[in-house]
Image 1 (cartoon, rainbow, N blue to C red):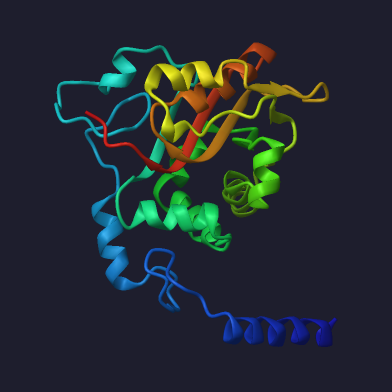
Image 2 (image 1 turned 90 degrees about the vertical axis):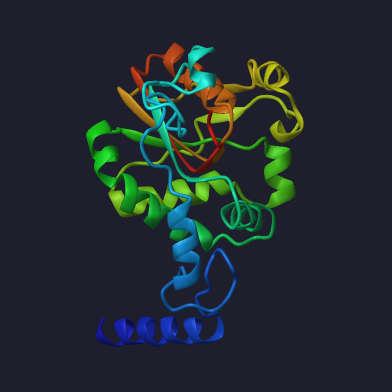
Length: 243
């Protein structure tokens, strides 16, 4: 056991030497993970009050409780938050994470989510965390589901069970970013389903990378609530600007 522990320590040191930790926002080597310069930039992009009481987007008018989107549509989820506004350097970091195999960024994102929303997650008391799934074709093309990477890290750090198999996409849908608001809702209608073996729990926390209009989270929450889940919350890395 003693030699095994020594081997693991040496192995970790070699791995760090060969593949040093880099800042997820500028790509430069940084023993701190997020470098000091990028830390200042992303701290300016953190979503702060006043923000929408439903989706967590910033709102300009302090008298408003909800953003424009949430005032004009009924969501199926109960509440959620995004960590940063979807602007540079956050947007490029997420792009690298999704499309250039930078899976290690998921560890950083998970730590930041806990740092900012750890107490809120505890207050929600989720029984289960579920990542928003990719269609099997898109997952095959990409090699992994970025939401599942974040979700697994959060589950490991918080000790909350993760289920990345029960919720799945029935249809291969067009990328949401290319569609209008109405087209997004239509695109995701009936897109998700649950496997027969899913065990219903009172509260589920959904994890995704980006929240724009909420249609993806709504579609997933709708399926869960129809099955009997009482509360559905969400967390994402970035979120739209709000107005």
